[in-house]
Length: 156
Image (tube, rainbow, N blue to C red):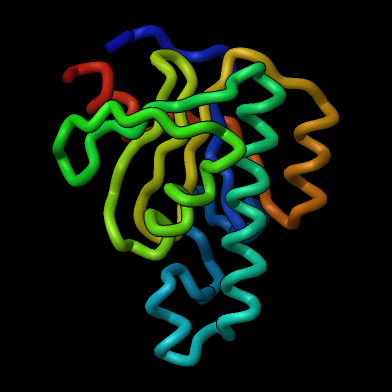
């Protein structure tokens, strides 16, 4: 594992950063889990629209950085190192977002990590304005932020 960080790291979410307080806490009451579909807080159609946006954002950021394959690591704490093509990344991202399991995706430097409350962290070594515009067009927000899960990766 590498301890180097990629040049660009972001928290990518559906949450508008203008709705955060000074400490960074989100002020609006919004759905934040697939379980909220069953609770009636979000429709399945809206959930799936946002889920698809997360998949598309991850795919766009990784593709922009020239990455065509990632490894699945630390699936529920077990080192898997199973490769997954970026074109098929939704087969990993969707179950993670639906809390069926937890895992990190990496290629050694770049990464996609997931946290509680529907947070996704992406780190890449190459980025352009066009891909940032693509992510925004999906209705998602990219905030410069280090992944809280990177430290775990670097220490293993």
